[in-house]
Image (cartoon, rainbow, N blue to C red; front, side, top):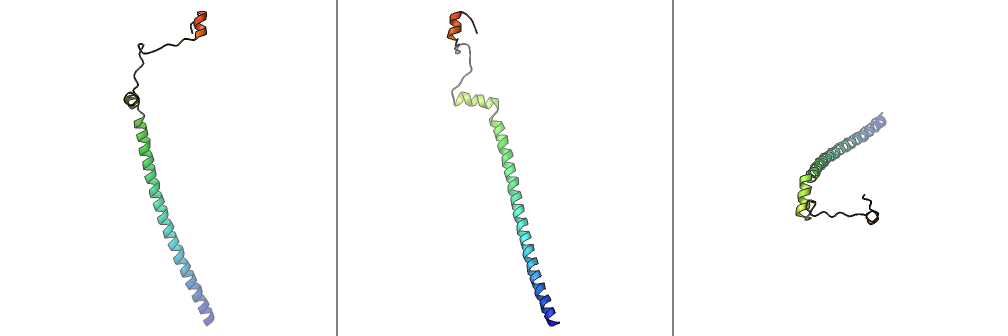
Length: 96
C-alpha cells in the first residue's frame, strides 16, 4: 500500500509540474499573440496613412505645380509648339 501511495504521489507531482509548465507556456504564447496583433494594427494604420499620403501627392494640381517649380515645365502653346512632318509624305504632297 505504501508503494502505491508513493507512486501516486510522484505521478501527482509530475502532473502538477506539467500543468504549471503548460499554463506558463499558454500565457507566454497569449502575450506574444497580443503583441503581434498590436503590431499588425500599427502596420495597418501606417499603411492606410501612406496610401492617403500617396493619393494626396498625386493630385493633378500638385503634379502640375511640381512640374512648373522643380522641372521648369510650362504649358504647350502654339507659339512654342514645333510640328514635325514626315519627309517622304512632304515630298509626295500627301499630308498625314
